[in-house]
Image (cartoon, rainbow, N blue to C red; front, side, top):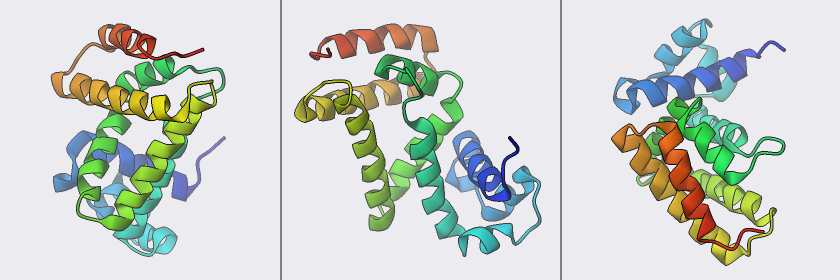
Length: 165
């Protein structure tokens, strides 16, 4: 199914952010990367801030577990095929430290990840601890440019420390 203009803007916005960071990111560059007319961001999102907020929503949607995907598979995907989006997530985390509204959206995304782990049977307190441990693990793997397969093996060991059913 072909993506809508809105989806193309969101996906290209995340891709561009993951590749070059906020220093080289702009609404115009997103429009160019998406192959849409200038002014499309304003039309679909009101302004650049609206685009960034919508990108967080899209990130939460795309980062969530896929059908039958376990947390270790999800982390493997984040460090493999979805690495650019993972880098974009960390750019958005840093930006949210100076923006309360953006921080609230990022927390909503973390809570969704916790909920996906609770759904497979881990108590909420442990699920929050596991998410924090996995977040540190993913950040370390991204910073070090770790091989996704090697990082995935460590993911299994981290998850194994929790009483996953």
